[in-house]
Image 1 (cartoon, rainbow, N blue to C red):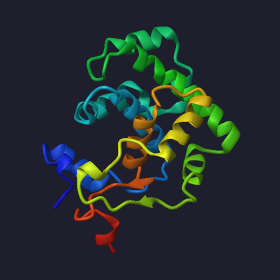
Image 2: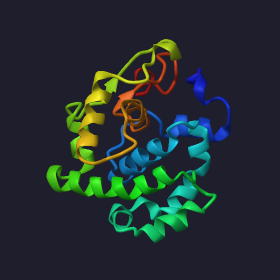
Image 3: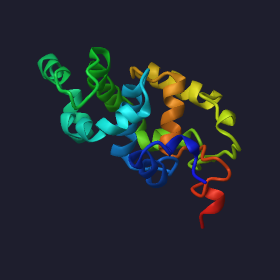
Image 4: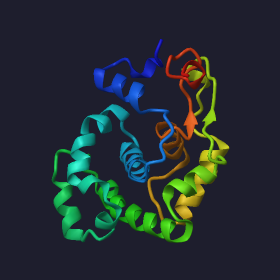
Length: 186
């Protein structure tokens, strides 16, 4: 049986089965997911998942160099686009986070290398039996959140960071009985 949180729609099931919890080392994907998790703050993930393609179009495929150079006028135009969540702080965070991403890469090589160093390049595989056993944050997400904030990122609180770690497979929180848990895959 799949993790029960994904059973509300086909889109959610596909996301669960094909992406969530699978270790990602794709630089653009890691950056995209960090921005999307921040956009999700205070909302349901289904809201963001349903707008994901719109986000990709509005924010030019999450090209960090392009996003870092956005002018206020370009951000204001995007605030009017119904394909994304039109929250001023979140829209302006895209530019700020792209600029912070550039600083991170200048000092650490890449987001991928920086992130995976936190776990010695190996996913942390948990074995929760119920959704109640999955924490909203951990000491790891606390530390990564603080490090990201120090670099200038915003919308990267510990709960958001933990969701990012789960989404990108740095942490696996598929329920132990889920067929997508690594214990059940070859």
